[in-house]
Image (cartoon, rainbow, N blue to C red; front, side, top):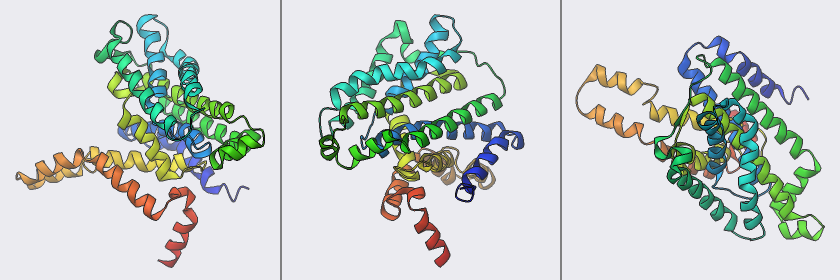
Length: 331
């Protein structure tokens, strides 16, 4: 057992000592984002990877959790940390009526409905200005100056999400999820209440994502509708994290989170500042223009990466790890 889990335990040991060994606030920030994406990706993986219900509405639950924390501090003068306790349950409450309406339908209705849910929540947060401050956003004072407490909170949340995944997938509940994914009619024919168990899967997804949103609010200190209800930056990113890492695998979201955050930051920062330094050293007009376009091309890079993964590793990095090892041995 320890041999099989060796790389996972090694990764955990590295993560535990990372903020103590690395003092640079920038890299600590990136690791906090990675850990948040582990939690969000794990929630999406439960719903889509194990239950077969593809969702484009992750941003709806993430935004609800973030606004729960923000509104507590902004309107009620209550610590935003209470959002960690309330953000998940409120996200579940938002998802429940949506799932109750969508799950009895077949085909792509749930995916389309989840896309609409995210946009509805974004529009509500935009126009409901007396509550959410609209596009002005909500600003709160961060509790800690250091990033270390936020790092360990994000790490604890990521570990908790993976533990939930382990417990669910190795229980009767997990077998019900997989049976629904593989053949919903066959699952229903042997007495499985498919709507009920899809609702449970959706609730787990919403709870984990809402809690991650609440932690994001406490960490960043500022949110607005375009940030936390973003289709591309939240909902699509969650899907890409799992596809790249491995759909239907426990450690897929972990690997996918590292890869996607790294790719995004390489483009956003121009190779971690390398292009900017090269531009200053060489001069001229071409490199500044090239740097500008490269720093805005992370979405294109995501698309190329996903196409390459689907063509070469259809089960993701973790799902096709044995193929990768064989290829490395041959190489």
